[in-house]
Length: 427
Image (cartoon, rainbow, N blue to C red; front, side, top):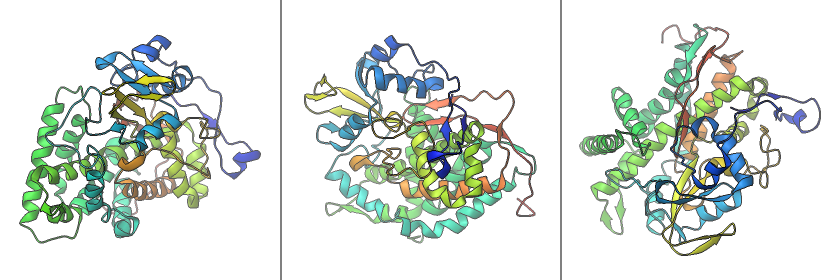
């Protein structure tokens, strides 16, 4: 799906830019479909999403789809940023997806608007600053080391199952929630089906996730305080009163969805890019000091958080189109991140790109709460993966399929690499 690449010897690439070469790509969805029938939950879209979004940026940057009762699709950076920042005109309170669906409780604070949203966000922010999570680095690196030890001698692994999913979920359970590890698989599965609006078990997933969080909160109320974000939610007040159970569950629910789903997707997409553009891991292996800025560029290129919905609260003009009050609008972060009006050589990987105002974590007041956690985890993961895995290739015959709604993640990424030694004698 993504083009192959090469590092050119002169010009910007001499500073580490990996330029995309003109390789064949998959064809986008037909123009008529882009113009009038766009459907983000269509299985036909998932394999050709990047190509289709590229076509839509030039063909119809503000497109009107008749699917799901009708909605607008935004693909240009300027339009996406405008809507994300203007919460008074484009509200989150009517749901984040198209077609609309709800869990057992609202995801807080992303399904509320300021000033209420700011109050809820403040409750969590203090526990997710770079300073607050700095002590996670050593145990997170130890976890990464042990996961790599589990497959490095084989010279092959299914990257999603062996690393991309267990690393963020285990670290989140251990460091943020202090929840039992043996419940990770169950919770991760519920979070996964809940995030797909047309999944036959979506309602069941939301109910199960809500029940699990309710039980976690009850257990933690009877336990010694750990000084973590769960304790903060339990002790929090809003407008002078304790949080309701629904509010507390909604806040933790959002943290779980973000902590488990999007980082795993980011890791899977990054590894898939490594197999197709081996110059990138080679560059990072030779220059590990570039990894922090490379993380930002890889997030721009392969955003796991690809879209979000808003609802217009009044009639408004956008990109020359008239949007009416009550209309649903779908913002494509993943498309905005490739807009050449904002990013020079948008298809190229440039670890020194500056400025890099990507919207992989969203934008505006609802920007991702867990961005600092994601950055920490991704940096540590790439430092260890690029140091220990060499000659990474996609396994012969691999057929990579994607989870594709508001988030994008490969279901499987089977890879091979040069076998290496464990760091620990036991795993």
